[in-house]
Length: 212
Ligand code: SAM
Image (tube, rainbow, N blue to C red; front, side, top):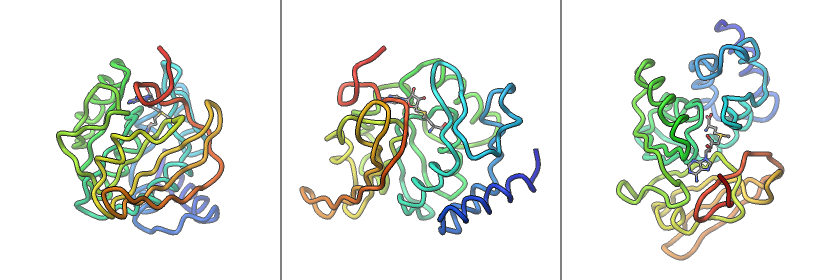
């Protein structure tokens, strides 16, 4: 895998409308293959989601880029991610200089990704648990990114957002969702922008879908 393949991916993302140079720079730098099981590594720089085991996926690079762009991350921002998965999205946020907190509900995924972060020197604060409840201890967050599809916007996440902070979350059915970009204007006022159409694995938890 090479730098050239990453630059081709970045050019593709630019052609698909991604403009934020900080996001594109992070995608050009982070080695996506490190976050992908060996048998799929040859596809690491195709713009597609890939399986990471346990019925879960690493999101498509375009989706990662679009969500990160909508989050408008600045260096030093405190960002909460729900759904650590492979760790790739968290690695992009870390590369952009964010202070990242990430929650994963499946213990096996949490443990494997924590080991990978340690190996790669990626300093992300992780925990295993139900991300629909947020992580109140470190709130408020400048940004919250949910990388699984939810039936609704969990109240805890709105509460844990800083004023002017942004929550990026796919909301809709179990198969397809609309990406909602929620900006907190005041304690009880939110502005919402809708971007169709995305397909995420379900967010499972108290304020998400029922499931195993
Ligand atoms: N951000 C990930 C990446 O970069 O690879 C993609 C994550 S994958 C599409 C969604 C992840 O969300 C899965 O690992 C799944 O186990 C996790 N998940 C689902 N419901 C969750 C919840 N309530 N809290 C935390 N994680 C959850």
